[in-house]
Length: 159
Image (cartoon, rainbow, N blue to C red; front, side, top):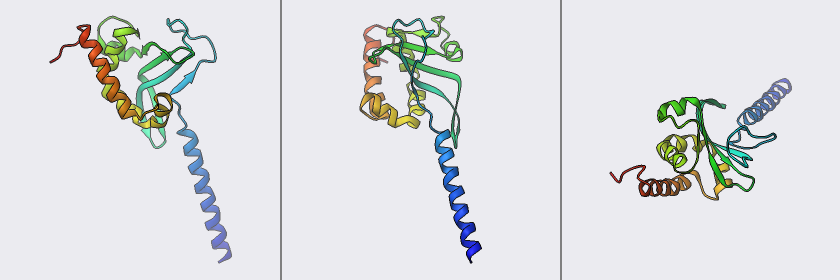
């Protein structure tokens, strides 16, 4: 009985250690502050928020960066623009490059809102920390605003 209880105790400890290791692997942050000068063309670029990437695996959560959208922000969090992976820029096929700001940025975000929402569901706590509301609510409000801005500028139609 003593050996069986010791074996069970060791098995439980190993199980808990494995859970901790999985949690450490899953400790992916979508928010990143630069430690060195950014190479982006955005003046004052200080940090990024990963809005979209490919989910390569869920247990543990792993990402691939073949398709991504990064939001670039200045030191106080103002939006400067977005950067796109080559793959996303190619999908858009508009020859506007991989860095976008202003209405061109909102157009991309509007068109990729479903994929952004799917990706950000894995990072709800960080979105709440950034914007003070959950991912779904933030994207619902943002989508409405982006749509309005793009319609006013004739980027998209009402239909």
